[in-house]
Image (cartoon, rainbow, N blue to C red):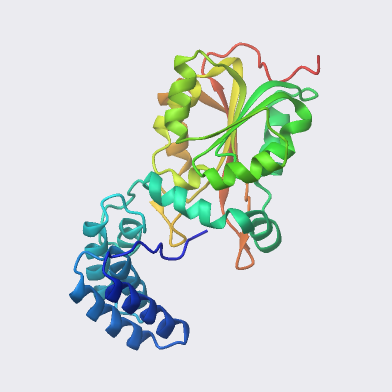
Length: 320
């Protein structure tokens, strides 16, 4: 999932109008004309990040990668919080940090703008099956009829994973960075608690409050997280004794983490295991599994269920 350019006004009415005029040209297929107008626009307001970003995208579509890189560097410099994702585009073209972390404002904007059509897009266009894959893996790890006391749906989105797990959970909490996604999840009436917050900050606050969860699950969340080590450690800190940490990632056959052309991260199996170990966790189940299909091809992925490396018998197992 990628978002269109986020419009942030330049503060100059004429420049803003030129920007919108350029987009009209691009929509009609006149990319060269749109690029010319955007060049004039940024000459008028050199710190107009939105226009620089759009110029980079148009040059990229025209095959002018050097020009795209130059424009996206200007967008990056004018937009320190990276609302538009210029650093990711630079990384995609090999012109920046290889795996830059996505900023909170970028991810929040991305999901806020897709909240209205999120379920339909995933389920109807991408054959999305992340919650079912995750549920099957947890059931296998539990090895008994599934009963979960408390569960945290990490990066809950609109509640697709919550719907899959709810029949097996006594108390269900969800957290997501996007307020619009959380609003969609709340409307489904699945959760006992919902919060709009950054995942690491939320887990840190839960640890301070001595909260404990029998299951922490993250379905297709970590494709937007470059380094899994911090979130694995934070999740481990709020697991109940015998609790499980279950998640999916997209993967690749090499080492470490790569930023894909889709602007989602793919994590190698060794990175996953090392991140878990750093948090005192170990994989109880790690297997290849695809959670979506794009362009008719299943996207390579992993499904992981982890517990404390010296864990007692699983708390996610008994049917009471």
